[in-house]
Image 1 (cartoon, rainbow, N blue to C red):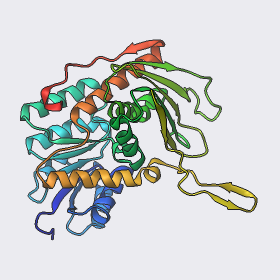
Image 2 (cartoon, rainbow, N blue to C red):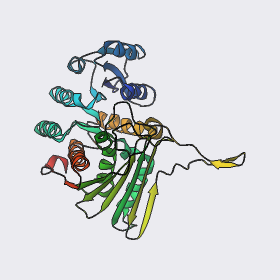
Image 3 (cartoon, helix red, strand yellow):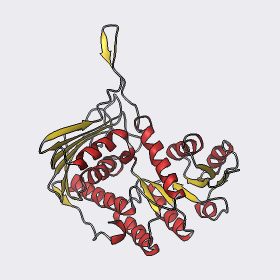
Image 4 (cartoon, helix red, strand yellow):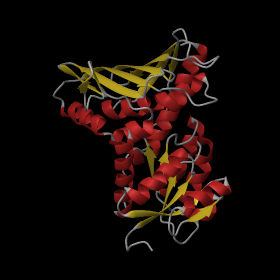
Length: 339
């Protein structure tokens, strides 16, 4: 039985990310427990639920959200299923932590935004976990302090060992660079106004037909220029790095030099092999922040506006990739609820 005041969570989607969140809530997060899991694969839902006392498996998100022992929802299903799940959560007035993407495109994200706005209050925290990473938090604090002066340039590097099966060139923008889109907006406090994608000769390690790596350039309404190297088949590890170049100095994160060894005529360290390794602490902080805020009756963190803006920038990025040249970002006026 849940302790008094414990947040009872339904996790929608029990794939790799969803199953990891189930583990996190049960083993790491305080003040919450998983009481329902949902997956279109009934056997997978049953298998995950079997490992959690008092957890009921479902195949229908609406049924889980209507359950008496569900207070909140964590959505970790594939992006195309998010809109329906979010609207159902709104109908039940349930707070939501929704993994990125909010939805796969700007039009559906805008529909979610309008639905939440009609409620008159926020109900959704979007899962842009880098905002909870210790190094990114330090960089954000430093930039906000003004010690380095105005940010002029921001350099990002984003590398994966290998792309998942079935990945296509546009997914480097939609599924990987989307993180740099959000963290750029958050670090600088700017909106991204245009995107350009340059296409180097593809790596021999890239699947046939995939444009990998890509070099993506953002322009912002604050006058900063931002670049992203995205390379999803680098072969050696998972790396996420950022360097801010400002009027009075620079700051860099992501070098991964927490421990360096010297042995047998060699020196060096280790490189994370995937995002769940590199950002484990960030995911822990993200979910704990959501639980704590929800128990206080609040919603904090990345908003539906942030999810919508990321979708709009992603669409501009895909246009730039496919058509060449510079693509402007199309955003509606930001509603007061998200200011």
